[in-house]
Length: 151
Image 1 (spheres, helix red, strand yellow):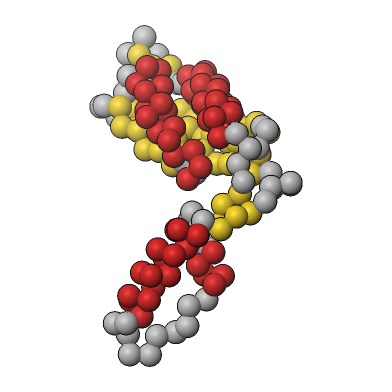
Image 2 (cartoon, helix red, strand yellow):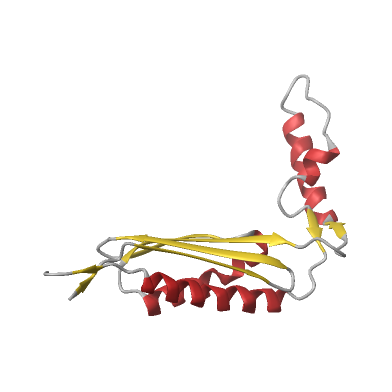
């Protein structure tokens, strides 16, 4: 019996630092070809996710998306001064190339990834929650695997 790699899974769980949502979509492909989309705070999970896919699947084009909807209650926002200074220096360098540059807007600086950060409670606990939910999503994806009959 041949198993198709076409499947979908979505799992969601409220955790200690917000709501985590994994979506796995896969289609037939000759080799295992993972495409990952992870939030910046969980970018270091990429290796573990790829390894989990290698152990759980043999082939398929797999799109894995993780979203973290952070619970901002009680968290203080902090400015990463080093990152902001690098961004301002780069903007000033580019402004030197322009005849009439627009003034730098502080809110635009804050909107760049990594400049404004929430005080994280426990990044390791968040990683553990995300990987446990990934395993659940992978199991759910396998349950949705379509079986090709008469092959």
